[in-house]
Structures are given as C-alpha cells and as structure tokens.
Length: 608
Image (tube, rainbow, N blue to C red):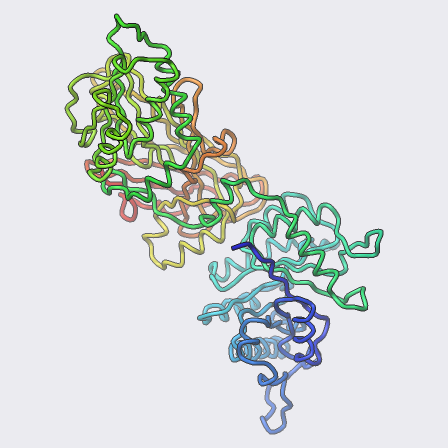
C-alpha cells in the first residue's frame, strides 16, 4: 500500500463551517483547522445561563464522524493564563477549560494550542492538566520555526517546547506542531526539530514564491526540508489567505508534487520502514531457540554472509591445502540453519580446495535447526565433509581441534548476545595459533534525544521497561555527538598466566553536545573485525552498506536529562557477569547525577 499525503486547511476565519467543509472536500483537503469559538468572543465568568449567548457554533452542524475525523480545533489565541492581572488569568483558565470540554464533547482528534509567551508556567500547568485527563485525542502545541530575538530577550521556540514537555512529563497526548517561516534557520536547528516528536507542520501561504508561470513554488531549502519532514510521516496544514481566486488548489497541487518527487529510499531502507522506531527486545540466544521465521529473516541479508565468506576465504588462502598437508578443520559454532557453513564451502570452492582437504563441523544447540541442517546436508550432497553436531558449543567434546573457529553470535552492541561467553567456552577446541572469525569487536555509545522512543518506553508505566535495552531501527531521533568506544572483546581470549577470563567491563565517557538538547538515553553500535581487513559494522561512520541483520540498541533513561551546548555529559557504562546471567548498568554523573539504571540486573539481563 503506497503512502498518502494528509493535508489540512487552516482558513483565516470560519463563519459557516458547513460551507467550509464542502469547499475543503471539493478542493481535495483531508481536514480543516477551525477556532473552537469566535475569535472575538472573550467570555467572562459569572453570567447566568439565561443571559448567555452560545460561545460557539452548534455541534449539530456536522455529523459525529466529520467532527471526529475531519476537524482540528484551535484554542482562542487571546488567552493569557500567565497575565499579571488576576482577572485576566482566571478568565483565561476558564476559557481553556470550556473550550477543551467542548472539543471533548465533539470528539475532536486534536486541539491546537497557540504558542505560549514567556512566562508560561501557568500555561504549562493548564496544558498538563488537560493532557493528564485525556483518554483519547491529543493537544498540538504550535511553535514558530524561527526564534524571535528582541533587544531585551532571545526566544528559542524549541527551548520553550522542550520546557513544556518536561513540565508535562513527556505526556503521550502532547505533540509539537511546527510552523515554517520564510527564512529557515541553520541546519542544526532544522535537524533538532525534524527528529522531534512532531505530529504535523504548518506551511503558511505567505512563504510561497511565484514561478514564471504564476504558480506557487518554494525555495530549494524549503523543498528539501519539507521532503525530509514528509519522511517522518507528518500531516501538513496549509494556513493563510490564498493568492488565487480559485482557492487553494494550486498550493495543494504543489505540496502533492513535492511529496511524489521526494527521494526514493534504497530497497533495504524500504524494507526497514515497518521497523522504524519500533522497540524490540534483544534476543536471548542461549535461553531461547530461534524460530524458523527469525532464521529466514537473517538469512536474507546479502552483505553479512558475503563478508563472512570473504573472511573465511582470506583465512583459508593462507593455509597449505596440498595433498601432502593435513588439510583444514573448520568449525562453525552456532551454525543455525547453515548459512555460514555454505559460505565456508563457497570460499573453499573459490580456492579449489578439494573436499578431502577441508573438514567442517556445524555445531548447533537448537534441535529444530538441526533438522534443517540434516536435510541441507542430504540435499546439497555434503557427505562426510560436513559433520552435524547437536550440542551446546560450551559443553561439546570435539574429536579434534580446529584451525578456524567461525561464529555468528554478534548482537547490536557486539557482546549483548553473549558472544564472549560462548566463544570463551568453545576456544578450548581451537588449536594454538588457530583463527577465530570474528577476531574482535568493539561496542560504541552516543547520547540520543528521542521523545518518540522514550514515550513508547514510558507508556509501559513501570521501572522494568525504563531499565531495559531495546533493539530499534532509530528514525525519529537526534544523535547528539559522535559515538565513543565502550567495550572491546578479542578472540581467542587467552588470559595471562595465573589469571582467569573476566568479561566484566566498565567505561566512563565524556560527551560534549554542540546544541541545547534533552538526552532520552543512549544509542549503541558495534564494529567487528571478522579477519584482518574484513569488517562488519553498524557504526554509522563504518557502516556495512546493505546489511540489515542488526539495528542499533537503545538504553533509555528513567528521566530525560537536559544539556546545554558545550556542557559536559559524563556517562558511565558497566557490563556485569554472574554465574547465571550478564547485564548492563548505566548512569550519568554530569551535568547532574542520575540513578544507576538496572543495578544487579534487576530489570534486564541475558541468561547464560
């Protein structure tokens, strides 16, 4: 099903909502944004019902379906809940409550609130009171893109929005709506807004230019930014008077043209669209047996298995496979349904290694995957060259030692699917001087701002989920700095004489965000050396283009942390091990301390 652009119209004034709805539909708009009451109707408290005029139009003018799907209400923009005058403040509070009650009565999907003016403490309290009592629908807080600067103060609309959502504890019923301006700010400001928790954006007719044929157009920067916003699947609101007697058709046509000509995503990214910002629990590879569908998804990755094949090819090319040699013993531990086994056999075939000179063991603990391997051995005619072993690699007693030990155990954070523990147990049957593929892997971490992801985690309404790491195709997020190295593991892992293997790790990192922001957690990656110069990576700077087996990992914070541009953000990360499980702990010590998340693995752990 193809994407569709949803565009609404915000007329200057609506005197007859029935006529406006008919005209809106005729011109091809999907919804209309209207005042909840007459803009000049500044009600006051204390009037008796018999002396009152209706403060707004009747609900019988439209059907319930039209109110509930095609109308966005607007709060009166003259309200001043932070006025220094008590009667103005009280009247503003009354109007907000009255209009929100009317919107709820109509069943409107959303109400747009005007941009708050400083100070806005009482305004924030009223918005928070509103969203806290909502069971459906949402409040769209409107903000201008370009900051207002005066001789007495500098106002940053994003900072105001950020303060408002912190006042409201990141409530899931509250969203910002961004109104574009004729002059766009620098890219850093645009990016910060683009990846925020936007619900819609407003395009005023006043920012349009006119092309040679007299039709509306936009500057190149506006076109690029709007197409980037389209990629976030936002609704669009066209606002202001039309320069054309025929109405708004030409504006709508132009926006639809921009939508239809936005850059086409590569095939891999199109496949990943359903997973964008979708939280997934990391695999528990030792505790759980993977299902056929999971294997099938991973096996479709063309890049991963080619890289493994290249690494095995390079390692085999350095060995003697003449008839007088002892040949090579290659063990695939955690063989799954056999993609690495097939990659190894393809690598050997490219080198013209005779089957008698390459002995392959496929070790797998999942009995269901063993069925697939046995069928594969029969259908591919592997014969005695490949031995299928149904066992946990940590306890299997190998009949001989391996020259090459190949594994596919990497997680989104490198070590989070217990590759170190598995390979430490399996390395006892690797020959001295033998090769492990992968040879090493490094995890990376960066602070991230993502109201969307944090809100989704917070919606579980418990401590456990706020102390759990998630695999996620991050889309609606702002990575605040370059990632830094965290934990490295090297294989084979031979401890120094007199010492035992220790996979506990600790790292302190200092980040310096270059823009004011809110940290909602951390995003993690890995970069693995399979063999020598053959790499596999999900780190953005070294990403293995085309692979889709791994998404980054997200470590949330229990409460978001605000940081200023250039301010030190000191982060602590631990990897802890016991006899039965492995877990991570994380915290911030600057700019101010947060609790240590997930102590003793109370909320999230990986079972051994």
